[in-house]
Image (cartoon, rainbow, N blue to C red; front, side, top):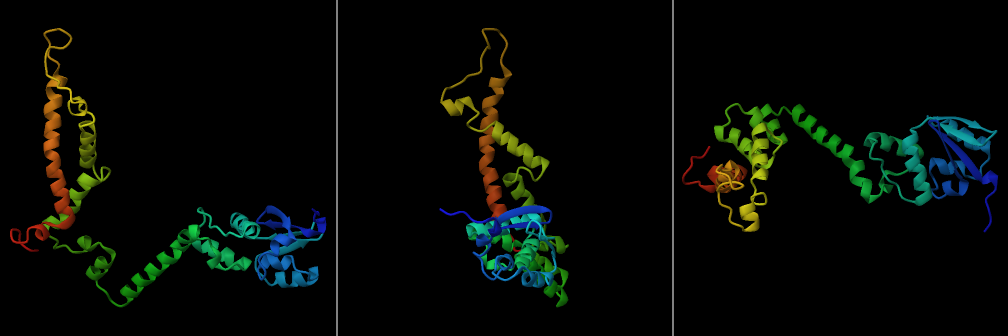
Length: 261
């Protein structure tokens, strides 16, 4: 298997980071900016074309090094695309910057791999959503209509009913243990006195409160553990009912009993 000559190697200095590769590697994506460096044209004509591109600084004839003042982190993914044929999007770089770098190097954004496409498209989706919001504001939508579009009509409407104000509070109390202090206390209580922690319910062994270690003293832990667990188990169905009602609304469950809002 033959070896490449040193003349086939090319050094790319991008943002102070030097990369060394072969010209044949750059020829894998014809029509791109790096493929121009691997063309059969003479150095003078290649430099004339590169000088018209913002970001290209100089060419060092002594060590055959091209210098580009571009993002070095993104270029590592670009060069890897030439080597592997797969274009991935870095997770620590925002979408507009990656899009700008792809445009500079002459790479089509549709070449991004499916596994990274959603990450790359996040900035596009956000921009489209903001454009729709700006259009609604320019068309004269009032605050109430704008709040409904964004799902915050409860904040905009000062005449909201008491039930609608308390419904998300009840929901978060039983579903999100980090929403408030009361939710944290409720979660810890359920975790502490769950059936897995109650030896009576977990093992099926009946434990009775009696003298501890043969003395005349009564162990208060055994006297309160069972009733506490049973009380908690009795409250759980009520908690599930409140969560269910908070999710769907009272008047939807019992329209003939409760008044419509």
